[in-house]
Image (cartoon, rainbow over all chains, first blue to last red; front, side):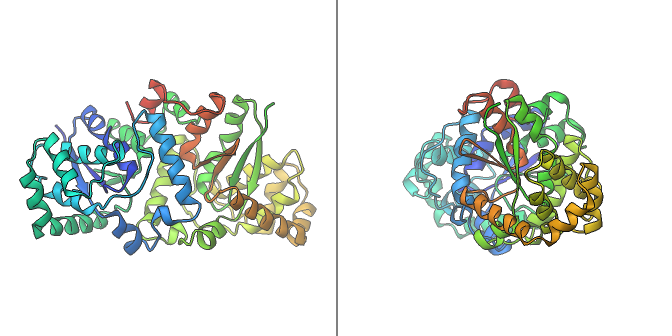
Length: 213
Length: 213
């Protein structure tokens, strides 16, 4: 196994959900594992970049709703109708309480799936308990995670570390110091990893599939 | 020929340059022509959406510079090193002075190419004359275009019409009331046009090329 790739995301991001369905297989193809890093996208967007939340941005907010539904359809991924954002702090605190476990990635994926495929409120403790149980974590783990100040601190620290690396969007893949923002750049991650960490002009079949031939 | 597709763009956008190299062939494959619509991206971003210009946005600005160079390399498109933005008003006024000509599309492409492949200052009248001449427009056309108040009005009107249709980014393709924002959604335009204006799950080869299989 080569060094892992870093997957930065926020539970409020349906694009992260779409990428979460794929990133581990993509990494494995290149003999990598995935390290999952929930961070606070809102801190990056509003505090650091000085922008509005996308859903509150005229024109772009409406477009995003359309775009994510089209993308989910194209990728064959189930997606709930409503794109109301969950409170991302409880699931992220739960994640950081469990991040040393080998099941942490499964937990991250299950939480994203619960919100974006099933429409569950992952800001709710009972929902977190139900989802956590499916990947082997007991309700006591959830109860402790939501009350332990260290999990809040871990999320704050993870957000700062992400920003320090230049991460500003969800999802972002970081490998070998290179950032790849967006579900729509996974093809570039794939090419980069398959090409010994170098960029090169695309082959014809990939150009054609991207609409460029 | 079926009804044309609308291509909205701003000359300040290197992503529009990349898409401009491809959009006509893509349209022709689906028996369409392209109508070119320069508009003021800055009006959309700053006045309507209330955002900062992307190059002035922390983290995202730096990332965009990297992203556009990687994308150009992947697509095999020449790109200048400097991403300084030209004054987009003179080339857009020139375009609207010529928009009834059958060579208007060639002019739009030549202007985008001049700035983004060759690094020329397309805000400069002499440069505009040189570029215009390569696609058959005389220097007098440029001189008139930059002084005729109607060309300024045409750009203002085009910007408002774009916004009224929901366009907020460059490039944006509009076909049959559907918007597709970004060079990285041309594959979806291609699929949509090839599927009688319907969306459908992607076939395996396209999924694979997008990094999703």
